[in-house]
Image: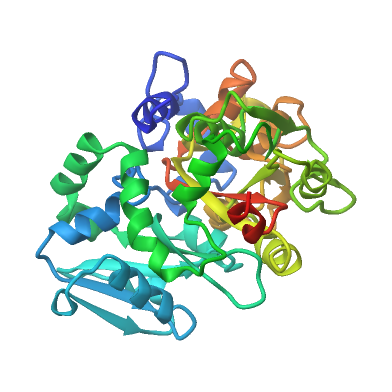
Length: 420
């Protein structure tokens, strides 16, 4: 499946034949709109993302090397070194870019400017989920660089974002690059640039892919968050197909109650993967970059395991606010309960208050199921979540489909991969 095909899939509307435009659902009846207004649900307080421009990792960096437009990279004191390494990795002449340290680079990069604006963030920054869903003038996950960290078994991933001004300035060039170069060719070219920033005990993510394809690896257990149909389950399938290792993979999409690290008594598929290590076997598991326990995963597992072995960028399914198919059943309620996974919760922060409360769902799909089962009143979910409950859900608002980075980990230390 190509990313172009993926994007065509995620334009889900109120029916299989109808593409839902960004913003408020134009197919809502006037009665339904009045019900929402009477409940205090004003959709102008919700976030809306533009359609993504950078679909393939490394395409942004390739476009930057081909343009004469000046680039400004915004960073803070903790991320500036990674930003400088990224620009140096691309071999862009120093007169074509500047780096600026500020207290809030994510906010600053979105302010009006006539240069290409970049921002660098850590893939273990606990603020990523809020920065992702609160900032619609920015594609937070467009590119990245891996850098070694002393005392850790594998490199750390730093993500590179680009503002909407930058994607417009690079628009034609980006489109041409993504049309003429496959993701694998882009990754192979980047590998040559990236490897000089790593140590002999490290592989680039493209070299990891080559290893997984080789005869040295006979089996790849692969774990992703379920239930089936979640963004992360789709991203794992996309990665296995694009890396051309689906024939070796044994994919497990875990049911509710099994999370990467486990939380509030849930099981941990990171631990399940660790128990599958054997000769010729490379267990893998996937996390979303805005996974709330990503910092904990890095700090607890990173000294002995490779937390950032590879990554897969993918546009999310359309992020949708949805309610019951018959919105009239909400009329007269003094309080509403909305279910979301913790990551996209910022999308509906403007609604939360005395009359609207939030409850955590284990996934976007689970949030939709909770509305379908009349356990909650509203949810933030995905196109797939609505499709799975089409007869029972009504789309209220389409927040768009931002690109997400999904990280791939293995319980093996990078040095062990090098020596396979």
